Image (cartoon, rainbow, N blue to C red; front, side, top):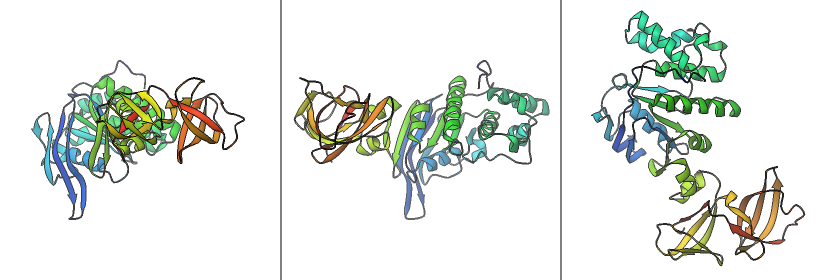
Length: 357
């Protein structure tokens, strides 16, 4: 989408405040467990987690498609917890797009404002504005069945924007696209969201998608929030082993911390983190491991296997009975044999401490 000068008039982004939110289905299923979450005006916040973690339920609660069992949902300080969906000034882009196959692009986008009883001239202006925003102004009379997956997703986005919502919700909107198209469309969504400054809540189970698109990410597990932070914070300083394991690849090694230095298998390195002294689990990202040069501090490992991938080589080492995965620039050890001894060290970035297992 290259219509950088196009704007949607009348969009006023809102804050979203979830307070003590609980959702039960029947007696046995606790889908959302006492969630507190404040979403800033104009922020793109992503709910990330595995299937069944509660992320989609929270989205549906915000939209008004489900009623909370306990707690409040405030939009700009207005309690909408018991309001029906059509009174919330919120709209959702669904996973399936939910386009009407018997309507052309213009009619699909116009549907919401037409149902609201807006004048015909206003409908034409709003639809033209929304289609220009997503780069589909020349497709107004085309059948939706004649569009590509990416174009259909843009129609769904235009239909959401045309009603000028205070909050825009995305329910795994890219899951039906192939990998290459998914990357391009997520960039379009992010660029558009930033240009409009519209408050957006995005649900996905794809960690790469979440890191690429979000201002902040909420990692969920079994109905509760594990951690909230920027993509960089979550990747470099995960608060729990679940977060470290779910976002990217990670190695976990036993260590000991004295408040200034962490000791990993006799390898001591300076480290600053707000944790008490004592045993810790040392999380190390694969790209934070490198070969120690002669004279450098490090720790012993046994070479098991490698795979050359061009810019990097993937290695698997044995470290005191634990398999350690590393991605190291260059070919390195191209003639190594299984069982060879090597010496490894950590880079400054990509190492974080967690409470002991």
